[in-house]
Image 1 (spheres, rainbow, N blue to C red):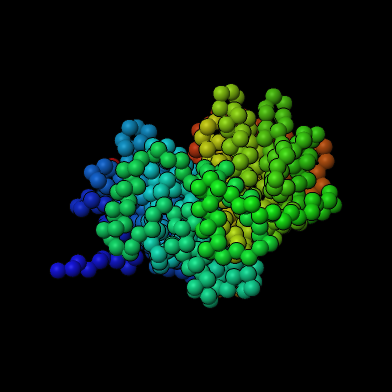
Image 2 (cartoon, rainbow, N blue to C red):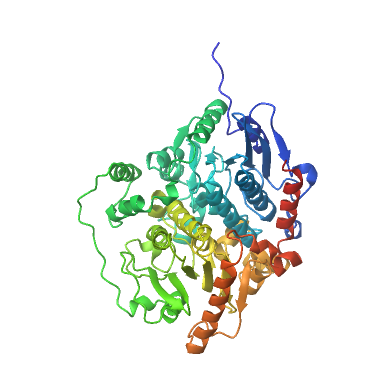
Length: 567
């Protein structure tokens, strides 16, 4: 008798986790009966869920200890808030500690998520950065396997997270992209991406296309046994292959072959990927833009102003991407590599001309950071300072088709790798620090510094898009921000969450002079010294005064409960 396939997609998060683990080994920790609910939803008129939409299960995979983390897409679209994000990050951190002790513990992520939960905005950003940091650290011991089964897919910051996995498994029903179709339509217009065109969506970001274009390791049928078998195979493969997010040269060569001025179809992109992957290249003459004049280069960019001031007479490294500035300088005895993303009004990619982190920017950030890591591996590790003034990631059809989530993952991976290798990584916020751009350029830092200025903002997306996605008026969002600082945009509200090492007052952020330079250099030097003498992970964000006073109370509680129940 023919066996009827069991759908993996149709199962809820808890049953998906059970299906992955060896029979009879499933044990849920920090589950619904612990009632660790989001403290931020009730005050916004939203009923919380007792497990906050994330299942953390201990058990075994092929007889070895494992943790399986499963996101429930039916609750808040699988959005990541403080509790759900801390459950994921904390579980990965405990798996890392096991492996560091010699207890081999496998890790599997079942991703059904729209990214950051907008009702908890900056909590979601911080938690996703902590999830990503844990994955990069854990990958050295065991493969971190990601599965995107379908229904919701994996979007926003969690698409970047998927791009960090050692192995990524996907069904045809699944989707993965940094920017959801509705958000692209809101930000860039219906001509750029029609969110109602289902065929366009799946041909751009669906499972079959992502697998054919090299962003997914295995495409499987929606079948419990097939997915379980793929997970086992990925776990058994070990850590021998370099993760996709570290293949900077390969993806950089692919981008160099692309002419954004020419029409690009999913089929054409797959062909180009296969050519480049096979070591071949196209011979078409790439259309070059004109070089930006100095006047053009000053497009309202605080990042450029502060880069020039802090690097002094140091000559920026010559590169093919003018929107990413990099130069080496000194602060006293400290060697420092400064990196900034700035506007390039004649960028080859039109959606990344205002200082956004786009395809070229993500891979170039990774290149400059990894070059410093490689050059310093046998000597003193220089500090890396990310000067942050990024309005967002780039929103566009080409960006999604060509894997902007993977470009951002490459930058995240590089910064996290540098931090773990002993490079003090410092983020200096001088302007906007928004969404996937901030995750890519700044949020993996050991220490985050920010200028206390009304135009220094941290958030997930523009107010207009946030209002549309949450179906609120702008006035409602601003009123809610008074109760939940994490959804506010201003830097003082962000400082209450505990992630800032210093909020720097008395500095002219727009037109800084030599006195301002001296103040910032002193703060940078102190942060570098502090980072060198402390843990290389991101735990300082939970031990800071603001975090301990209540800014990260739920995050701390989740980790306490995980510690009590882990064994």
